Image (tube, rainbow, N blue to C red):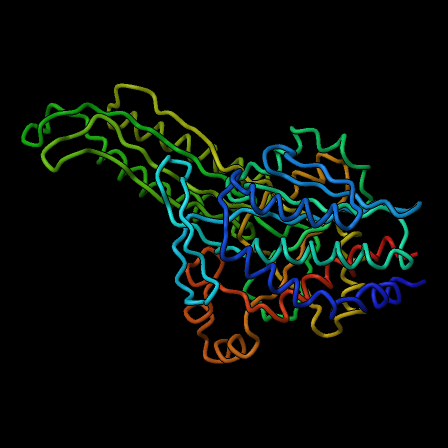
Length: 420
């Protein structure tokens, strides 16, 4: 059976799961959970996979769930969905909007929302699992469904790897992932090579000498020091990175002082770095450290600066052969709705899993915006203002055809290897 015929046979059951899947999605959206707190979501996933005949492993890493469905001899394909939500107060006005509050990483209670579409990812992968389990005569091999916690904390994938993932699943021939983005719903987009940027945050602490605001001559003012660093950092991308290379350096936070007439003794700057190559990333880090140290010396800082990195996201670099195979399967099934898309400046920890398993991978874009809204906004040059993006409190993918397309995409991509 060809991959296209197998996909048609497996997806023949899609209409029968539509209501269940839409209800599941609404439930997940209304009950979001922060990273490493996804116990309710993980429980739903594990129960569903067991009912379908998957061998299920729970608490992988923290709240990760892995289901393995072996269906005779053949290749192994692993598909991944992330489960966690964000500390965002929902403003969509949807009847199934979240009102959940939970304790965040700082120990304070925060509102919680699926503002990045991970509820879409879970519903699509569970839907694909149902369809694959219900049409086993149409494929052969092993289908692995991996549900990952804490993507938004940049540590869920590594926790699953450290939790023994490689001992729980056979080595995949391909690893697949998708993310709902602000493209028109009903479309899928592939990209070979670097697709999602490497992302990293850095906390820089610089030291001064405190004093009274009326006695600045007795101080080493960390506010002035921090300001000089911020200005100088603007030259890193504009003057040190080749214009052909993508790089972003953002100063997202500065904290200094406690009162208007007190000169503090230190300042904290929090930076975010993005790049599509390790070489460019290393250049930025080197330049940041050089500039900070030089400005500290120029200001007479009494102590060496401190550098701490966190939220480390690896580059998502799609394997060309795997991507070409999936893209061809998408074109066959989706026709003109399957397109090539450009690189995305967002970041993901997805690639940690296939790298740890020694498997090639591809990760594609799934459209989630109402097609008419997208077309209208694009015609007026208003996409940025009228189409809420990921992490917005107004982010709300349309349920259909987003779920239908995302589910079909997982099935079609997996059957590019598993068709009997």
